[in-house]
Structure formats: C-alpha cells, structure tokens
Image (tube, rainbow, N blue to C red):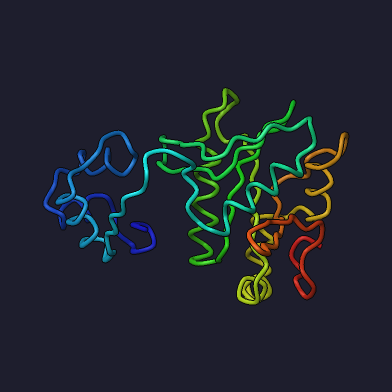
Length: 216
C-alpha cells in the first residue's frame, strides 16, 4: 500500500509522527503498534483502519467463499501432497498465506481470491509472501498458485488483464490441476486455478472458464 501511494518509509513515519526505525519494524511485523499509531499510519497512507473482533477459537478463514474453496482444494489433493491452511509469514513481509501445499520436491504458496481487487498489488504481495515462506528451503524457492472464484466479474477482469496474469502465472491451468490431483505429473510452476462455489460447497475446475485465455 505504501509503495502504491509512492511513499517512502521516511515519508510515512514523518507524516505519522513516529520514528522511522520504529515504523520500519511495524511494517515488517517485527513489533506491534498501538491503535493510535496505526490510525496515524493509516492517515499518512490515505487508508481507512478497520478493527474487528472474531472468536478466538475455530478457523481463521472468514470469507464465506474462501473456506469452501480451500476445503475443495484440500479434498482434491493427491496423497503425495500435504496442505496447511493459514500459514503466517513475518519477514521480510508480514502476512498470511491461505494455503501452503508441500510435496517431495515442491512448496507452493496458494492464495484464494473470491474477488479480484488491486490486481498488481495482489500479484506483488503473493510473490513477497511466497518468498518469505519459512519452510526450510532456500528463500524465494516456493512456487505460487492463485485460485479464483469464477464469477462474471472475475472472469471479465481475467479477460481484461490476461497479459498481466499470464506473465505472473504462466503455467497451464490443466497442468497445475493434473499435478495436484495426480500421482506423477510434475508441478508446472506458477499457475491459476478456478473454482465454483454452489450452496456452500466448492469445486476446483480443471480448465479456465469459457472465454478466459489465461492458463490455456
């Protein structure tokens, strides 16, 4: 968000009235901040701060479409893959990866999106979180998977920004699907899968929706 606004860390720290080093630690997740400081940072970024309470028990997935998609993907995985939902990363970026899929030779950071907003930011954050994944392998070696809920809006965005999505996720959708659901197909690299949610139940699609060229 800071980079999208064209601001440096020094700019934000100065506008928020806090020390630059302290702001840097907040941004990287090395330290927390009071609500007042977060509000000041939000004002400096031109962003709204939302504070919500959730039950302390149960799953951390709150998107009513995201949870069925994650469940469907976990069900579809071949036994050679292991899925771990809601994996937190802290350095060099702070965030949560929706699902991390691990195999004998591959680690895949999976993001599930029921809507496509701020596409370039989504791609950048997905890459940064994958690079920050602390799984014991060399930094930056995790691959990426984007799972998109198929709606009129998301299909239109995928058609409109086909080149951008194709550059970030160049593998064929069918190759990624076959690799995750089959016994011996190799993982093809960064890819997009599509999903449907009907009556609260998710389904992972082997091919992109009709009219979507990305992943074909």
